[in-house]
Length: 305
Length: 260
Image (cartoon, rainbow over all chains, first blue to last red; front, side):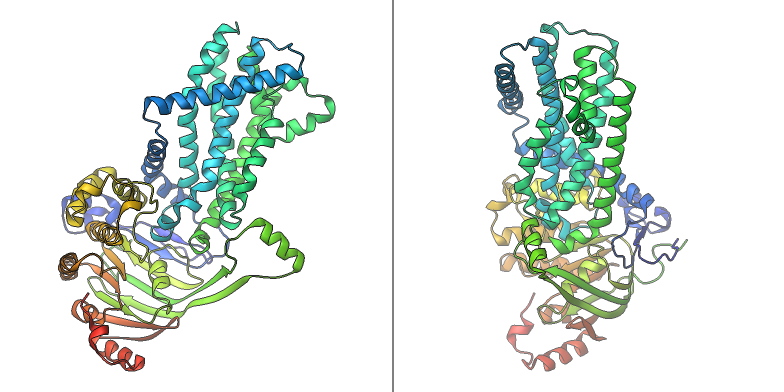
């Protein structure tokens, strides 16, 4: 099996499971494992094996997310209700704030834009917040069990996604009551949610790994996330941004996807190609950067915790 | 392709592990920026293991002894694949289950059941297999009525019992037990010692780190002595224990031989 690459760790499973004496449990190929551990500096493990292990242990990410939600009373009526009331109140407060600043000129369609943008934004920021804590708070598990650590921030994104789902139930009546168009173009929301998830996963992995080295990032993060909201086209329409601030919108990884989000939901047409292209570019860049940073660092986490 | 049953279970070849640990209380960005301004460094390099080589044939029970801080736990973590080696190479054939000094239960707010399930899934067990094992784990630990309580409510004895039950009931090819035999009350200790004896009698490779030299002598086929990161001796348990106790100059009194 082994190619003797220096500076890498190889974990390879060899041999068919049936090659060894019996027992019902041996059906799992878990039992014939073969690991080789070799030194490395900062470097990537063999990607194929890593992804395979990641996939084998996906149940862990699902179960971790379920457990986290159970701890947040997601399964109870009031827990669910709180997940709906909280963002709804937030949307109303922001609406009144913006409407006052705009001399009361904002209509129900703006409320729909604000609510949709806010909920999508909170999906991303909730992911990043939970992901940033995921590695540091799994201390003992990391010290005792070898597994692909990237499951921890990915599970946080999954948790945030499940918390995002009930907010759709609030948005739907607001969309309908404010008389916004309904049609096939709304299917664009599905790939856009996927784009938000990719951005969330990328930034989440960066934040999770960075938190291991700099614990005080936990106290900076709320400010960063608040600023991120204010520079995103949520409290205003993207087309209202004056020329001199356009650069901020383009440099903000959520600028383009949130613009596309509003184009689909509020303007009622498919997102324009340039906005969609920029969204996709940001999502891919962040995902690759986040994954590379996290995976190349993760074997050091056990020493750093 | 070599079958998993060929060759030694564990082959450690010229292994060295060097840590760069930060001696800050907690690593912070502001701390780092302040230090950059002052051009201070707070990273200390510790060589935990130096040029250690040994092999463990399949089915061997290997005792690992040495003073506190000798590098035993680092060695166990490296064999388990948790810490990467700095130099050298480790080859492990088979699935490893670890009972390291820190035990299970990474989240004290979660219940015993949730911790066991998450730990098992992270270790790569399938959900079906975990369900089969779960009952055995709970039965062995005798913690039935506590499994749905948060682990912060557990006493340290209960904590240790659960950790021991998880590790020994995973049916691993290779079991690594780091100073965790003396958990629980006298009765549970006897029970865990019996379980250890049973496991040692099977065709299973076990690494047993313990300060209880009596149990090393009783259970192990071979022993190694780690001293300040170096492999001082590898031999029959009796010979290694004799050399170790002579070195410590404590003699084989009741304290070092204390059972389990």
